[in-house]
Length: 442
Image (tube, rainbow, N blue to C red; front, side, top):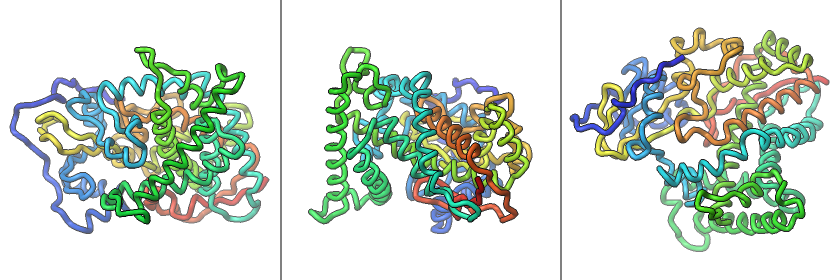
């Protein structure tokens, strides 16, 4: 396990700015950072060392860190010294989203949002996950090679709409049509600043606002339906839990704030979990010894090797490559470096996940490395870390466990000798290039 460094060095500093060396600006490096980030950052770390500075069009001059000890140090920095860079994400999620909150506001909202994704609430969602999985895989072809990613996208979307939004009937159908289109469109607007300007009735920004208005109308219908339910006080969907929740001062969230949070939960959790599942099928079909052991455990009613497999999928095929903090103090000391106000620090998760010092034989798919122990908190960071670690991590883990268990109980995944699928950038996640293709038989 990584021993956490003292945070005494990870605070404001009066020392002169001292940044690590790194590459100069080049168009090729910018393209590779977007499209081939895991490999390009690993190459730069090998050339310049585990911490380096690089200019990025998306973040400006950025310090990239690749070691667990540095992750540990950064994640324990007070949020007024180095905080999330996410406030600009309110373009998509709205100002009420936890992604845009800092310091005390972030802590206040996190305290309200955490309970629905743990304990009994989480167990209540397992039946929804299994039901939606069985519906989808009933359509799977047998004996034919096909991509699993479209199916995992459909399953995880349906789970979130039911478990988080409490949607059913017409509202379920409307959200199922609207949300994927809107989130994909919103990601484009966020990436290209001029698209955030109002150029008139036909501008992308007006289209975005129209989609948000449609979402708010659906949400109001869902809220009215939930609050008029005679069993409202015992409903377990996240929407109802948030409607009943209160801040420490006794006040409740506004409907707009709830909407912003639900959009955030869907956007951050739907495609990422679906992509990890597609990678799971891709990895299992190419590692028959792992698949055989996993199926045997599921048949015996066990779960430890299944959990280890999920951890290994997320290590070996990191869907979200990293997370970012921005320096809010005048200067911040981090390790031997002193970083000035306004610069960003990028946590390169995939580099740490594939470093043999952290995970021996990293190129091999070995769930055994996680058997009987939890992953190291700072060497394994697919959900980020610190006070901004993904709130939905437990929910995503539950989905993956239920979906894999249900599929492998119904189907036999046939092994393949095909080469591993290429890692490709899909706008948000790094996904299998051919969609996680498998062949199954009942």
